[in-house]
Length: 309
Length: 267
Image (cartoon, rainbow over all chains, first blue to last red; front, top):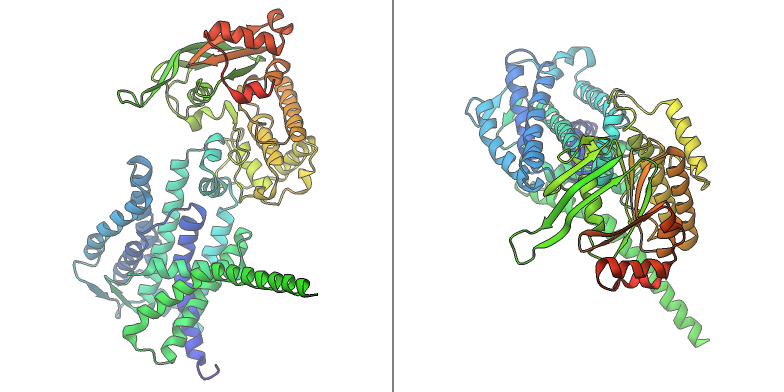
């Protein structure tokens, strides 16, 4: 394993793990808390990247973060509007928004399918000299994600946060507490959109590049991270859950890094990631099945043993 | 005070499945009045509650609470003044959230002016603890546990606390709220209900299939059939009434025998 995971590989896996953890956190809000499968994640991720890249090119790499989050809020808001005010099914609303976002993203990139920000400063290059060439990207990613996590954990404990959590848990109960579920769903989806877009923005600045297909498959990857985290750390308090999401995201990146080091051809990477996702999602169920089979075998052999005596 | 004026509700109007669930009900429930409601399946009892609570809007007629017309007020806005419990103990609480968090949500009805970004305060936690200890179920020591771990009876008692005592509503709607509980727990929840209603001087409507509790509890009894109120008794006329007397009055009022097994078995 030592030769498989050299320090640069570990660092870059951690960097990506932390940045993509933001999308997993977004799905934690929309999928685990609100129980809404948000299929607009792919488009929203690219939107964040495109908006962030444009603002960075204009010379404001730090302003790019709130700008992209605002774009994500817009995407989440439209998704919520379709669901709560127009009676569109959540899955359909996600697909519709995702389709629409493709054009919006192209427009945000000046109707070109990719956008380079090599010449512009990014949040990473701003601090490159101060933090040293090896660690600067990891440190900045960790700082940003840590701030987001603290704010998210705090927010989910407030009155509004509690209302959002209850909406996914028991909508009737939310209504009897005199809260409008349409409102809590809207706030939740806006929050989730902003996190997805922030992740996209960071990836854009990290790679110094934005591509129209950047977000393809993002929802699957984020879901895998979320589920790996839940499987390993379990569903407990909010803080525990958030820690699990980040761990899951980093582990997913390690798995991908190992696959690359084992010289899996680049064309096969999508298949590798699909397999990882499927295994991660199936693991908790299989674990249960194996435990049950073991118990069954033990009980059966004990019974047979009892008869022969 | 709750007042219904000629409320009508029809499901699937204009189709072969048309069903008149409520057919022109007018009813006034004063503050401090505890009315039990009995009637066969499909008599319109739950539909009546849904119209009052705003789960759906009445087709015709109006609903007034303390002389304010709430006919077209959405359910979550009515919830500040209307508390409701269902037969299913799972319906009133959020299972993946802790007892404390559930209570904090219910308490939002009283703390609308507080910032949505504030957290549960120390004084609120103390209040929740006090109120939980009154249930006598030891829940005050389990405030950080998810509600999903509680038994049905405990959940229903907690829901009663959330719907009625923590922030007293103007009217309390109980839809067979003890039907899914074992007899001992049901008794306990019923006693709690009685206590809550008396202490807070609430107007209360309770659907039940138990003829004994229909007569024992409260100070008024309503019988429903085919979307109408066929019998409305209170005062001295109700005091001396037996279960058999009630059944007889039903057949006179509805023009037919009561055909609900669950009611008849509970005789």
